[in-house]
Image 1 (cartoon, rainbow, N blue to C red):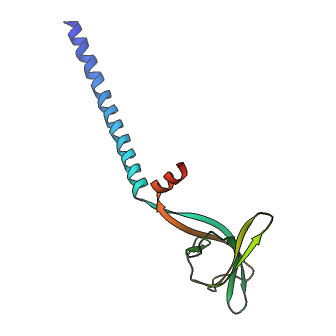
Image 2 (cartoon, helix red, strand yellow; image 1 turned 90 degrees about the horizontal axis):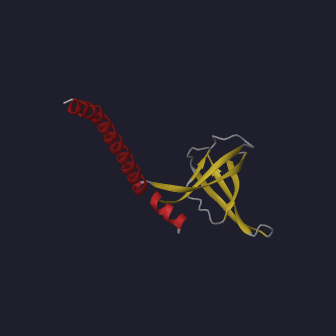
Image 3 (cartoon, rainbow, N blue to C red; image 1 turned 180 degrees about the vertical axis):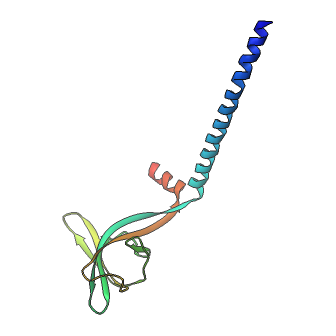
Length: 138
């Protein structure tokens, strides 16, 4: 009779551990499914960072050099979006590095100071995360 009692008490003490383990496994599976959902549905941009030089007289102009394969349609200045107008694009070829650069001149708002150097972020190629992972792997 004592064996049955000992088995019963050992079963009662093991039962909550199995429930906790099951809850823990379910939580891990839910986190995995949520992460998989985010990877499949979320779209992100590729990013190119550069620096630009501001010159202000009557109007402010920003001058920067970027690689020729970077599009210039989505630019953020110091992590903020400002209105800008493209004034000129000139292509330069660097013979030592064997790449081409674009000298980009933009007309920007008066929120900047003369002779200020600002950080530029060029966002391009918006794709889902899973597509970017596939491109990197294969």
